[in-house]
Image 1 (cartoon, rainbow, N blue to C red):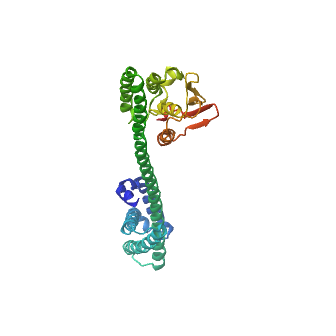
Image 2 (spheres, rainbow, N blue to C red; image 1 turned 90 degrees about the horizontal axis):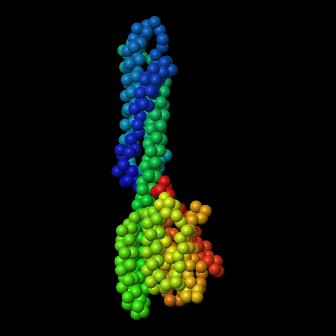
Image 3 (cartoon, one colour; image 1 turned 180 degrees about the vertical axis):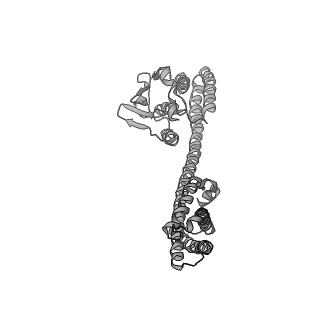
Length: 352
C-alpha cells in the first residue's frame, strides 16, 4: 500500500498558498512584539518599516525551512512505520534547527538596529520562534497524514472495485456452460422425439444465444429487453414441453422501460424452476413475473422434485453474487410447500 501512496505523491501535496499568505505576515508582525524583541520607542519607529519587512522575511524563511525538514524526515526514513516516532523526530529536528536559525537572525537584527546584544531576550525569542515552527510542522504533518489516509482509502476502494469486477466477469462466464449444458440436453430429447421440432428449436436457440453473446458483458440492461428475451426463451421451452409450461407477465412496457436488470436473470430463474420441478399435462408448471413492493417477483408453483436433472447449484448462487457485486443489493428467496418465490431488487437508471 505504501508503494501506491508513493506513486500518487502528487495527490498528497498540501495546498497551503492561502495559509501562507495569511499567517506569515501575521506572525512576522506579531512575534517580534510578543517576544519583546521589538519595542515601540521613538528611536525604533524610524526603522519600523524595515523592521517589519525583516521579520516577515525571517518568518517566511523559518516557515519554508520547517516544511522542508518535515518533508525530509517523512521521506528519508520510509521504513519507519511508527507515526509517533516520526513526529518525535520532527519536533526534535525542527525545534533544534529553528531555534538556532532564529537565534542567528535575531542576533543580526539586534546588531543592525539596536547596536547591543540582549541575551535573555534573544533566548526567549528564539525559543518562541522554535515552538511556533514546531506547531507549524505538526500541523503540516497532521494534514499530510489525513490526506495520506484519504488516498489509501481511495486506493483500497479502487482495488476492491477492480477485484469485484474481476469476480463478476468470472461469475458471468459460468452462465455459458450452464446454458449450453441445459440446451443441448433439451435438444437431444427433441432429436429423438420430433426432428421437425428439433430444427425449429435449433433456429430459435441461435437467436437466443445471439442475445446472450450481445449482452453477457453488460452489467445491466432494461427489464424490457430481458422480458423480450425471456419470451423467446420460453418459446423454446414450450416447443418441447407444450402446455406443461405456462408463463404470465404482469408488467407494462412503460414500467419495464425504466427498470434495469442483470442480463439473463430471468432466464436463470425460469431454468431453476424447470430443473427442480416435475410437471405434466395434468399438472403444469406456472411461472409468474410481476412487480410488488418495489421488487421484481418471479414465482412458480412447486410441483415436486424433478429427478431428471442434477443441480449444479450455479444458478441462484450466481445471481445472488452478481447482484451483490454490481448494485450491493441482495435477492430474497422464499419457499413454501406450494410456491417458490425469488424477489429481485429494482434498479432504476438513477442508481446505475
